Structure formats: C-alpha cells, structure tokens
Length: 421
Image (cartoon, rainbow, N blue to C red):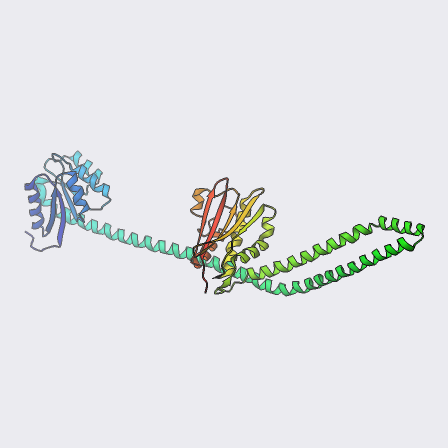
C-alpha cells in the first residue's frame, strides 16, 4: 500500500452502485490520493455537478439503468471541458471499449482489474497537465500575436496620421508662401480694374456729351455719318458690356483672394491649435476648397443653423468636412444633391453631410471607419480618410456616425461638444 499522500483529487463518479463507488474510492486512497468526490447517476445530476466543478477526473460506469457512460461522455464533451474521462465496466468487450475510446474516453478499465486504475489515473492526469500547459502556451502565444497585430495596426494608423499631417502642413507652408505671391498681383489687377471702371465712366459721359452736342449743332450729313459709325462699331453694346466684364473680373479676383485665404486657414496644422472657432465659417471655407469636386456632380444645399462659437482644432475638423464632402461627391454617379446641415442640440454642435448617391451596403457600414478599408479601385483610395476623420472627432470628445440606404444615399453626422473656454 502506498503511503505518500498526494494533493486532493477532485473526482466525479458516475455510478449507480454505492458499493462500486466506494471500491473506487478505496483504490484511490490506496494509491495515495485523497478524493474529494461527488457521485451521480443521472444526466441531470451530472449536468449540475459539471456546472459546480472544476473536476480533476471523471470515472464512469459503462452501463447503468438510467444513464450510460457514453451519454455521460457526450454530456462532458458538450460543455467543452477538458477533464480526463475513464470508463470502468464489469463486462465491457473489445468492441465496446473501442467504441468508448472513439467517443472520446481517455481509457477503459475492467472492474476485475482495478489495479490498473492508479497507473491510468496518473498517466491521464499527467497528460491533462501537459494539455493544460500547451493550452496556456497557445493562449499566451495567441494573445501576444493579437497584441502584435493591434500594435501593428496602431502603428500603421499613426504613420498614416503623421503622413496626412505632414501633407497638410506642407499645404499650409505652400499656402503661406503663395498667399503673398498671389495677393500682390491680385492687388494690381483689382486696383487696375477699379481705375479702368472709373475711366470707362468718364469715357461714357464724354461720348454722351459729344453725341448731345452733335445732335444740336452738327450738319445733318455729319450727324448721320456719326450715328452710322456708332451703330456699326456697336458702341452702346460695348460700353454696357465692358462694365459687365469689369464687374465679373473684380468678382473673380475677389474669389481668388478668398480661396487663397481659405486654403491657408484650412491647412493650419498646429497639433495643439485649439481656439474659439466658427463651425459654419469652417464649413464654408472647406466647401470653397472642394467646390471643383462638387459643382459637376451635385446641387449643393446649405442649411446652416445658428451655432455658438466653440473651442476646437479647426484645421483638423476641416479635414473631416473635406473627406465627407469629397466622399459625398464621389458617391454620386451622374447628378444628385448634397445637403450640408448644422444645428445644436443640448450642449452639442452637429454637422451632417448627406448625398443622394449609391448608399453603403450594411456589410461595409461596419467596416468604413477601419484603417485601410476601401471599396475604391486600387490606386483610387487609401482607406484612411474616414478612419482619420473618426479619430479626429473622437479626440474632440465627439462622435462620427453614418446612416445609409442602398440606392437612396448616405448621411454622415459629426457631433462635438460645445466648449466655451
């Protein structure tokens, strides 16, 4: 008899005979184990015992009046638990033993050969410990792999943000440089057009006075010749049209100056440039920048509500608005409508961009904010625009949501809290 005591063994005995169960317990004690056991003889009792585990070992009779060893084994497998399962029987045959092993039993023992019980238990416990250690190692490896995948994705996203910020910073530097270079000649053009308009007014007055004098004092033949020449040269039309052309040119020059100013505002990329800003003005500036992307694809409708000023990084939010507007235009195949709305609700500012484009399928709506996800053809998109936009809005303690119906259109909505100081 072995006397060395081993750690307590939590054993579930599936057995309808108390005597046979006691025989198993004596064998365990003789083998040096101190069994902490529960005996069950029905599926209900075994289910409750499995839920109250854990168990180091399950020993089951093969054949019982209300329950069988194979049924007990199937019940165990249904839980997904990895517990060594031994079948003990008084009359198990070779075919039955093979059937039990195929069903997942770890070993079988004849009741008249219970001296094999302790070696079998030790072997199965050792193998179970090995499986447990392998599972721990696999889980640790899987966790490390997932951590590396997450770190790699975060690194790629961070790299994308840096690239985007550097690109926008470069645009900002370019805009700062060209603002002076463009504004100087535009000042000459605007000034000269203003002077030209004044000159034209003087010329028009002079011609009108000359015509009045000619009508009152010139010989009829000379007056007729003068009027024929004026009609032939289309002087009246020219004087009227030149005024219109000058006004158009002044308007165009003012638009150029405004676009340059908006570009400079749009591309301010100071990382911590949180200032009190006007969201409506920012949207107008961004619309000016991307107008060429919109005007050939859609009617633009602006429904701006009255908004309070709020502290934010306006250049970063401009990136968000630009991405949403460009995406809206690209979602429309021929001609449609883009609606830009702003409003307040409670202590939040909302800005939405809606389009009447193709819409986004449900399976893609779950992925559109993931880095590098894109449905565009290769080389047509990086899949970073919405991911970066989502990140920017989240850093403003807000959120970016989407609603879409295939064939009807899409609405992206930005919500940011109102920050007054």
